[in-house]
Image (tube, rainbow, N blue to C red; front, top):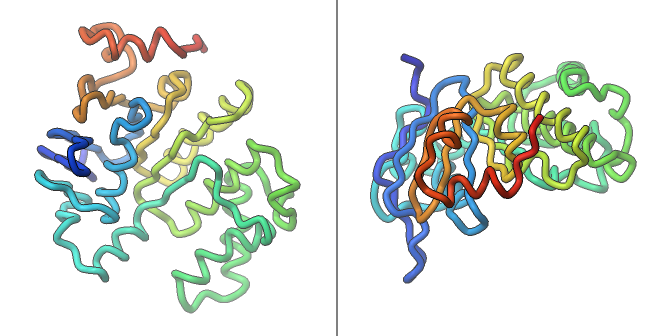
Length: 250
């Protein structure tokens, strides 16, 4: 059996009368790519915020690397967050910084005693890994949407995270660039041995990148399994509707 990196049991979270998570159970295994599907407002972001300690659940448990997140102190939370990399939907690059400076910023802030040479080598290595070594001195405004996504992934990888969280990684991209990003997610897992959660509405992305999928409806995961298992045997029409609405055969 593969090692469990995240173990969620009976997780509940409400905001006033709004019940967002209503008894979530899920495991995430080492070096697995897990795709999470769910409509806007279904609780995907709330789940991630509980995982990194930005929110606390009302009931249930969230174990990450064997530790209950809600019981961690500030120092332990900071240590946990350094092991979790978040690739934002909009890439979240600083417009006033070059690509090099964008990658350098989290490294200098969080890792002490690195020489300029070591920093330069790490940045160049990561830019090579995402296929964009030539962009090192460019500004974000000079990059295409796909290039920004790749640089965003490189910046997330700069701190050597063990878990990667991808938020709508193909949103706003053309079909060809979408496939490039899907392939990059798989390449990152292979090269850096990461464990990943991919939040997406793009079922081509889900099929290409996901070892397993989990469909979040009514505050619970209604279907969990491989792409074919989820959609071939789904009893809930709302699960099938994801397929009917936006799946593009690759």
